[in-house]
Length: 196
Ligand SMILES: [Zn+2]
Image 1 (cartoon, rainbow, N blue to C red):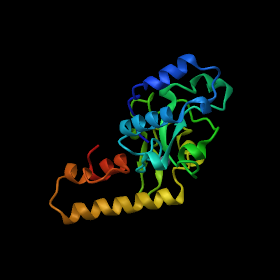
Image 2: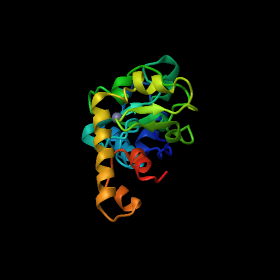
Image 3: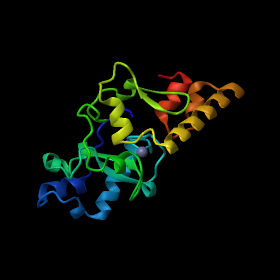
């Protein structure tokens, strides 16, 4: 996971937020939801805000970082600062869908933490590990709440690492050039290529 700038608020969301009755997400028109998702995807360079897999409007959804189903976060239902593009359109075993109504540690917020990427490392087997100076609840949040070490994600990361290493060994290209070939797993790419 990495930190992100909060995307600008879409006009349709502002209007809806100012005129809404209650906090029912389903009252937001579909067209507006698509506009927000596209804005967030651009803001995230087309990767999931949690696992950093490459995503498209067809393979992603808007996740409420602080769950909209929780009474204490209901007021954040239509806040841009609580919306993140996550992998999985209608279902999924990781990220926003795995989290569901569970609450992430307060500090684990891509728009609020200054540099989330510095708290984690990826082992050669694709496992994301919280560094020793990360908060105590970091590993359980990524393992149990977001399921970022799901088998599929681990193998995708393993393949990504192998691919990067192969290119680096075989081609006379700068790390920056190699990084430019890839959309998915940008933090891992930088880490493997020594660009951090
Ligand atoms: Zn994801």
